[in-house]
Length: 219
View 1 (cartoon, helix red, strand yellow):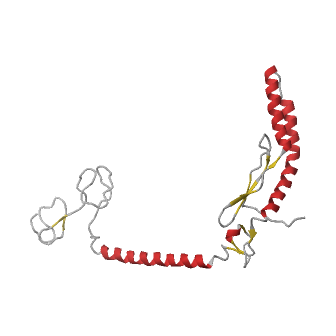
View 2 (view 1 turned 90 degrees about the horizontal axis):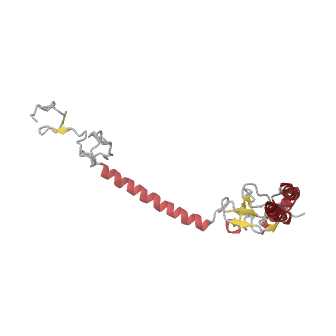
C-alpha cells in the first residue's frame, strides 16, 4: 500500500455523479500560498451511462406520451450503487498523485507546494521563512516605521498652530452638512458656534451681549 498523505482543509471535491460530465477530480491547495493542483479527470462511466439513458428514454417516452421515471430511476440506482466505492478509490489515487506536488512540514504538518518548502530543513516557509526575503521585508518595515515617526513629529509641530480651545460644530444644525470645524457651513452659509472675540481683551463674548463680560468693552 502506498504511503498516506492527509488533506483535511485544503482540498475540494470536484466530482460529478451523473450526466455526460460524470467523473472524479479533486483540487488540492498549498497551505502557505494557496496555489492549487488538480488531479487528472477520471470518467465515471456508470454515471455517464445513467445520464444518457435518462435523457434518451425521457425523450423517447415524451414523444409517445409515456412515463420514463421507472427506467430513469433504475439507471440512477445503478450509478448510485457504484458511486461511493469508485469515488473513494479515485480519491486515494488522487492523494497518491498529490504526493509529487506537495510536501509535509515536519513542524506544523501542513502541506505546501515546492515553492513554499525548505527542503534542506524539511519545513514550510511559515515555520522557516526565507532569510533573504525576511531581511528585505524587515528593511522595508524599518523604513516605513521611521517615515511614520517623522510624519508624526511633523504633525505634532503643525498642531501647535491649531486653536484647540475654540468650540466648533461639526454638523450644521440647519442643513446637516458636515462642516469640518469651519466657522460657516459650507452647505448653506449658516454661521456656526464660533463666539465673537472682545476687541479689548480678546475674550469670548456671548452672542447677544452688548458689552464684554470680562472687561466691559462695548461691542
